[in-house]
Length: 224
Image (cartoon, rainbow, N blue to C red; front, side, top):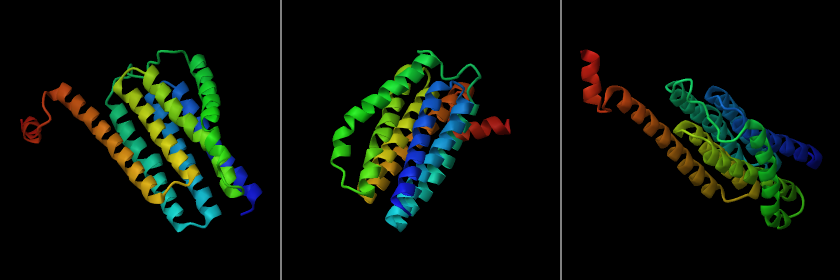
């Protein structure tokens, strides 16, 4: 792969991450947000694949495959299951208008480029420089996730913010060339945390509906 093609593919993957982050903030329907997260998971896996091709790394290929399964498959599916149990009115219910949210994304992106500038300047020349130059995109996705947490009402819309932060942190770890073991451990820990949050939401929903989450009690309800 030539350096020019590598840079173009890297920009395409990072552009997909930033675009889907803006869409997740702009859209309020949870069903649409779930589809956006599927696309963002694909973009994140694509980023890992581009880095794997450029670095000829089997380990990075494994990470890219894992990201595709987790971020584009498992987590959006669990999120959609939790969202399906919510009433239609339980959309994102933003505290700010959609146009203001898009302006906020632009401002947060500019802030990310300012904050991440020292990391970009420390990057080595060549392919490492191209990857480090894209670090602000990952930081922008993390900041967008914080903004979602601050401006959304309800547990599920705020869970979308956690997903955004999770994807942004993973993108930064990939682009900075952080240790693979640390990346895998952090990604697994965040994914487990998100799964636990979703399970807690499901348990709360069950408790509100039938009054208990004990399996024996639920079995008696079925038998009766």
